[in-house]
Image (cartoon, one colour):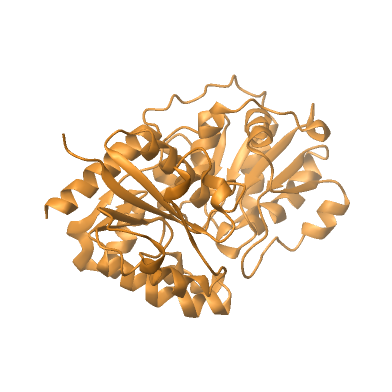
Length: 363
């Protein structure tokens, strides 16, 4: 019988809680899927103190740790070979970097090209320390697993030579939130609200819908804009009207919320707004549609791909257009919810990733 693939999954950006944004969720779901397979022996490279995130997923002696954190950790991660004992068949970087010094088929998940497309959305240290290693990792990888066709297009625009090694393995078109029970957010129960999910970094464009909300409130004074997401890791743009609208109770910033509360918000939002100017996949749009919410998106290609023609697309620099679109929804009765059934899940992501790995190994 063929022995299982010794598979090193690099998850050094995952906190000890195992909870976080789209990139964290990607690693956790991929780890669970790989661990469930008989043909894979899963190893994980975790950040210092974050072993607990993988408890019950990988065997304890197969969770290897890496010292260092923050932007400086990028340089350490690239030289992580000495932290892992024995040879690996596969080494899979899941956030920008592929460790050197670990033999095996090198796989890099490409979530986006923001480090090159929008460098000034990042702090100075990250701009200086990530771009070079990221480009080196893209060139060195035997397989590039792109989370959308839009992301693959961005990669090959910068590096045409990697096109034969770049494959598209999209995220599930549903939501892993369907696996948790919804938890009510009491302060919003019975209220009319729109939801935007994203940090306040400029490319997320949260400021556009906040400023649009100032216009919405003049005609719908009881409507609330709920903003969910962590703080930005660099420059922020919450909109000119943010402080005044929060003080007036028109905008409710909630920061990070649990998956149970996020599900409830998707299920009860009158509509979900996705104004981002640049995405790799567009998880909020896919999740909102999975719960049957009406969705407005920008014209970003990844968001268009994630919503697959089921969202209304609007220009990303026109707050007055967003205000008009929101008011048009609020002035009509809420339609019956029609959740979009998922056609692919995380098991499909795992299957297609392993297929790309094996093709790369055969090459």
